[in-house]
Image 1 (cartoon, rainbow, N blue to C red):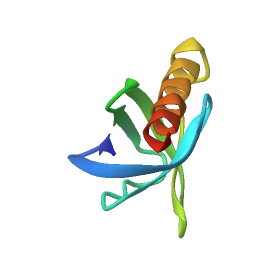
Image 2 (image 1 turned 135 degrees about the vertical axis):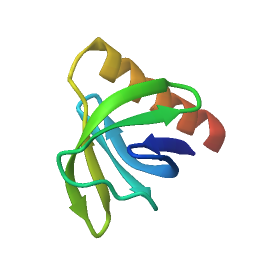
Image 3 (image 1 turned 120 degrees about the horizontal axis):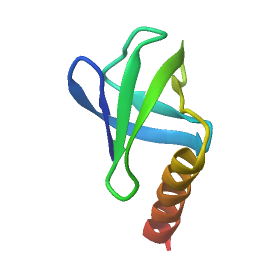
Length: 84
């Protein structure tokens, strides 16, 4: 479980993640264009911007770079480890 922080922190579930962004589900629905952060229990925290609000989740974009790739890989590895 992740934490999405905008105006206030709220639980968030990862649907998809890459080095460029993520799709999440959360009870907190920030406005499109809002600057938020996403905290993962293994990967740490990353700054993001809300790029879209859809029925299937909230789309976030990260500034592409080593930090975003490391964040995504950590989240993917943690998910794979938990499912083993």
